[in-house]
Length: 190
Image (cartoon, rainbow, N blue to C red; front, side, top):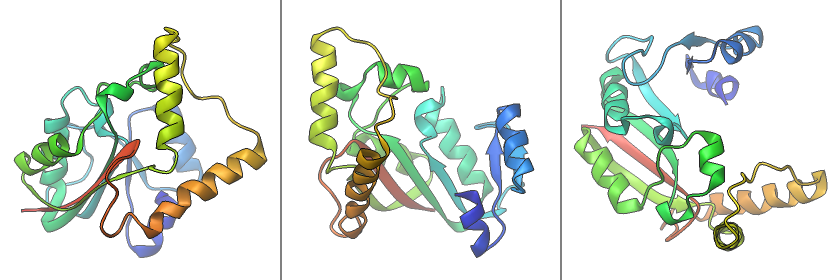
């Protein structure tokens, strides 16, 4: 993602893990040691856009993380956030990934707005796969199965799932999706 974003301007990644930091740098990416909320390695007002893609759910204090992103955004800068949706989908998968929480649309809107942003877009996504994912999570809960869902399907099935997931890009823009496994927010620093 960072390599692709570099085609549009200066793109900086932030990483806490030294092994991942070294791998990114070896690939020629500008990735700096740091963390949310207190350790962002860029000055205030530096960024036109901040992406927090599946980040907030890992933070002890998601409000502090959003406020730190607010500080590094220029006036009228854009924040893009993705997070897992619905607390009732909580499972061993979330535990294995180090999640602290899952979100609902209304609560995420309040959180983002109370952190100094104006929400321009809020939508669920990963809607097509939602019934299957919800069924698996509920089935595992009934069986008290606390294992994660990180097994990789075969290449053909994985390609099919990728194609299915990509179909949503045509719908998520307008009017948005009413439910899904994840949430997307696009907001402006106000």
